Amino acid sequence: MLTARQREVLKLVAAGKSTKEIAFLLNLSVKTVETHRAQIMERLGIRDVAGLVRYACARASCRPRADKVFRALSTSSRALRDSLT
Image (cartoon, rainbow, N blue to C red; front, side, top):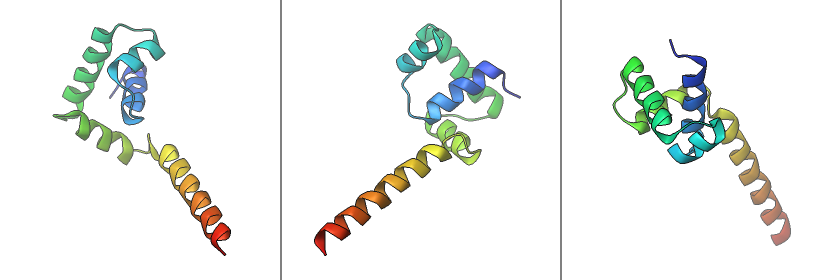
């Protein structure tokens, strides 16, 4: 089980934020963010950041962002198709 702060860090990692960005957003030191990330990975048995992102995405932490990207691409494709016809 993750703490509330660890869940916040996990969501920001999944959103593609760097350690410095997460530290700034949560008003923490870079070292504290690194510690949270290490504890999350240890608790979940994950060995790398890519695995951490996959874990978060599998649990819907990053789905809304993917939906926004898909909608933007669909809209752009539609606008391009309409301009060509």
